[in-house]
Image (cartoon, rainbow, N blue to C red; front, side, top):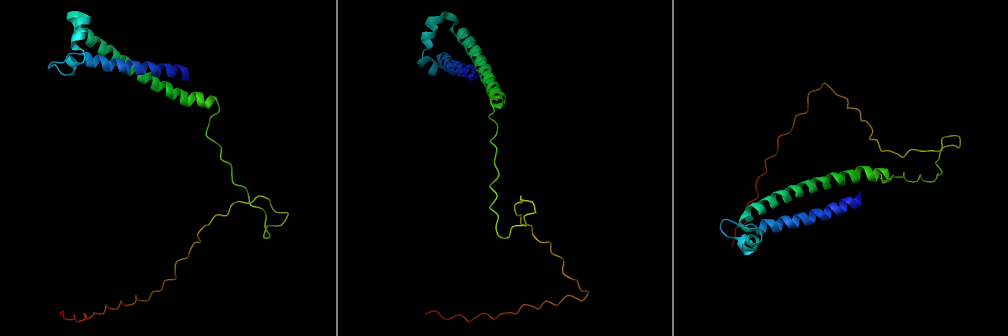
Length: 153
């Protein structure tokens, strides 16, 4: 499948270059770039029907360009989903880290040998006991007297 997609990519590059050249060969109404890059040569090659031939070639090459681009898009999607899955190139498997060796505080021999990693769980705090007494009065802020400014010399 990748060989076919490579060939279609090469054809797409050729079609895009051909499309650029065909557009540049067309004669513009004000004699711009088309006249400088071969407007006269195209007339000499195709005769009086130069504009019709170039317009038709532009239409067909543009259609071919978009069809090839869409086919390549679908081909790459197919390649990514089907071909990679069939060849076993799935996501890599992640192995769990090694369990540390048993320490002196290990459980007794009769206990299970596997241990789960320790998870820090915050302790639940009980709400403080409420009293029915009136709230304490908030003292008024003390007014500070500004320091006298020193005279400038």
